[in-house]
Image (cartoon, rainbow, N blue to C red):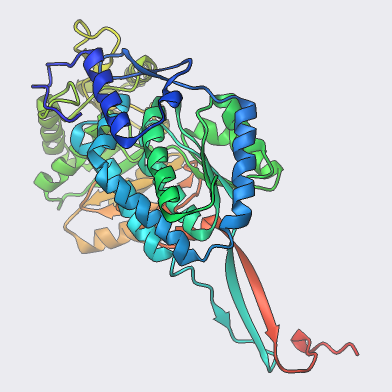
Length: 515
């Protein structure tokens, strides 16, 4: 929000949140017609309704896919650096309206102001990266065994890219995918989460304005505000060669076979269940600061949230005491207040999942050291604020195998680095990981082939807060997808191996003679 309401225990009214969201939407230029419809948007800050949006049914989803497919025929012919000009303009508009879009994110999903601003900055940053990438869609040239032949590869756009995003990053993840897809030459159909529609309207409106400003073909980006049935149409449609989906492992299990059944591509960013190792040599001041943000930031609702802490016995008591003390002092409350560090869970289902996980942990011999209780319930019966929980566990064979999208940090001891790595890797998910150590050999072993099995491995920083320059994604049940930086743009393209014969003679490979 644009104003400092007060301390974390002082909450704005639902009407004030709605007014701020509407002000920001108006400043961006969102079509008022999109804000008229049956879908109620609730703010997790109070639990009240702050807006309504239209609901797009299967026919509207089909029409959006058709429009994007038609637009692709023109967009693919536009030179890549010219396509980059669209993304550049979008980045400029995102920068101009950064505070407005961040205010919507705060109102809609409950992020504290610095995290909401940081999310929009991620979209701006990936736009910058994609503009540069538009001039570097490199293929390679290979030596041919045949004289007078040139052997090379080229990269071409796929077509329509379907993007399905989760509530917790309602702006950034769409931008990761859309900026790269557009510069490669694809068109986009975006289905955001139900608790993310206002942010999607804001980001999409700015992209539409950018497209008009640079004269891009109409229809290259389509926003569908649809439910699960509408999303399924996107997954099933053969006109969508790539579906990029962010969400739970359950979502991935449901949609991946459908996409594979029609020989489409799936780019999946699913569950995290991330772990960190604290070695005997670790700088505990640095480690604890990193651990606390990674475990409690965004109220534990990041795919990269730290959920498992594996600590050497020699420093276990000290680490547990420091983290518990930090958890106890975290300001929990309204994300509109300057002093807040932990905002609300998205809804009552998230709270119920946290409580069920804590009950299961206790049944499996775990001990809640601190936290796990609901706060501000008397003042806000329809909103769900919770204390981050620190739980000592005897092993990780039970509840620790599952990701709970809430602030719970489980703690396990270890004796040797080999044991620590085995514990770390002993879960089905493989997104982000960390080790805190001043021992270079330990750090290198953690990063080696026999160390962390995750897509992201860090030394002396937490599991969350990845930069856009590196590819983002994970292994195992996390899905194997890669978005954002490095060569992630290749996911949105098809490779063609080409041979040009300029010898004037017919020559076959491998010395084959035919005529």
